[in-house]
Amino acid sequence: MASYNDDMVNVQRTGLGELIRQQRVAIPLTLQELARLSGTSPSHLGRVERSERFPSARILRKIAKPLGFEENELFTLAGYLSPQPSATSEAQPSYGGGQLDPYVSRVLAQESVETQRAVIGILSILKSIAKSTA
Amino acid sequence: MASYNDDMVNVQRTGLGELIRQQRVAIPLTLQELARLSGTSPSHLGRVERSERFPSARILRKIAKPLGFEENELFTLAGYLSPQPSATSEAQPSYGGGQLDPYVSRVLAQESVETQRAVIGILSILKSIAKSTA
DNA sequence: ATTGACTTTTGCCATTTGGCTAGTTATAAT
DNA sequence: ATTATAACTAGCCAAATGGCAAAAGTCAAT
Image (cartoon, rainbow over the protein chains, first blue to last red):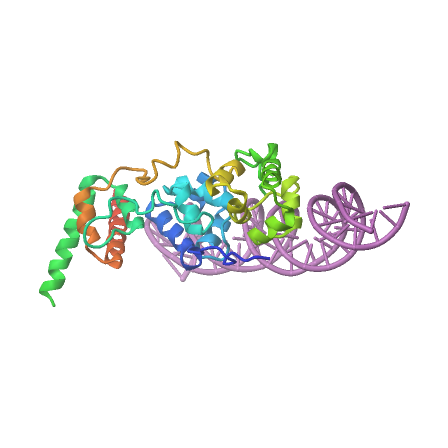
């Protein structure tokens, strides 16, 4: 039978599980909480997170909201949907110099603006420390 | 195990297979032609069309284009995707909570992705500390 | 150290999916 | 009518999904 890397884009093989786990612990949720929220089982979700099992569309759909994902996002990451045709393509304005990692963007966006600013404040402090000890 | 009518919207039960067949014959294509075009098997497609089997997301994705469907359409019809919120249109933002402050976004975007991720990693640590000392 | 309460992982198994290979049923053409 | 030929269907089986229950880890508090 066709394994998932079959002909799908397979972002997952290189990290869908990890992404899901990151998101879950970042929220934070335990496996059973997520399982309960999504109407699935913790054991399966655990295996999904460490990439022992590949989640079906049904499972992805169920865990999307509790994790704060857009269904589309997960489907695309899983290779079930081809990369958003044109819309969504490059998320936000895509700011200046580099680009902002979508995952990072999403996580941060859930914080209050004060927290967001505090975060980059801390970052700049760390950078100045790093610089002075160089 | 959860059968597909589980908690999915299940348009299919009342006709996804039929719809696919209608579309296929309308084109017109034979089962084997469609199978070849989509890299699947005729027998399976046949069963899908007469609703003996329910197509996985992988199969839906493969047959979408040959049938002239948008992937989204089929996924929605199959109940894999919830009815298009308003038209995929709203696309981007997505983030549940709030919005990403433009200034924050701009500053962070200048950093490497590793740094970006490290930053939110630190944030999550701080949050868990805050939570535990609450 | 040990108990106790959680969280995650493993073992096991029922259910499904989907492909291959034969059958069966149309559709023509002689 | 009788073969051909093409389309569909059915039998079978390997692989994978996902849930339940029990076994490991974790970690705080005693």
